[in-house]
Image (cartoon, rainbow, N blue to C red; front, side, top):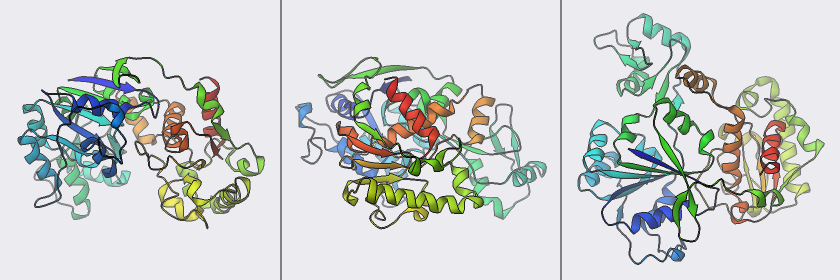
Length: 408
């Protein structure tokens, strides 16, 4: 397995160059994986007028197939297509269900993977520490020397833990002891490919990079040749032009709410003592939208943690068309939005930090937060080199972005 990381700035034609590479190939079998269903058609039909990829000058295209949701479902459909050695375009979500049979088919047919943006490869399982201890003390589960959690056949049955136990039986649950359980994407699913291309930006600070380091997977960095739409030796992207394209709101009235290091973090939003602060933040967002920028809803884009959206939305930006998930990547549907509000303060979940440290990999919280924020901001009009106005009430996040722009 050779891993090639195409690490270049947003809007640098990473996907377009990958599309050209795939459609001009004659002797490879491809699986292209993207975060969203809407983006699949770009890989399948790049010459369609709505995708505007004529500049690639493709003399021909190869056929990509999308797994269908019929019969036994998409996973079975995917396997059937892979057995026939068809080229596949699908989503991150489906690929996360890769099982032993699917992995063996991919390896047998010598597939190459194009991964559009890093995928979620590890996340906490929702179970309390006391319940983990009970399952371990009762001999239901155990953890081996490398942290893999196993179900012990013949042990006492607990119906209320059925979902957790079912996940453990897949062999994808890891831990460092009794305090937490994590779902972890199987590394052998990646090792089944002959080659892997990861299309992203700031890979160095992603959890997927930490994941590959954990399993001692080697990778090489490449950039995009914007004249030939191909990949070339890595050069650090020039982001200097963005300094003059991002107008960051500097207002004590709007920003004072974010002075603390952990203001607007996940825990801050969930702190019951911050109910009044949430009301202030809601007012600040409205004032930014209605009075500071005086923009129309069609020009506006904002985000917060998904389950807190209803606490902050107001007239003018209740619609799904104005809201973009805080972890969004690889979507271009908001490129006409030039008034933007980023109302989160990102941190890696402490349990993930603990697990990676246990495996000898350190997580840089600030650079992780910066990379996630930059990805989100570039869903907006700045992706097309258009000027945007940006509200970031978190002092920490605002400082990270300012330093990134100043040091470009």
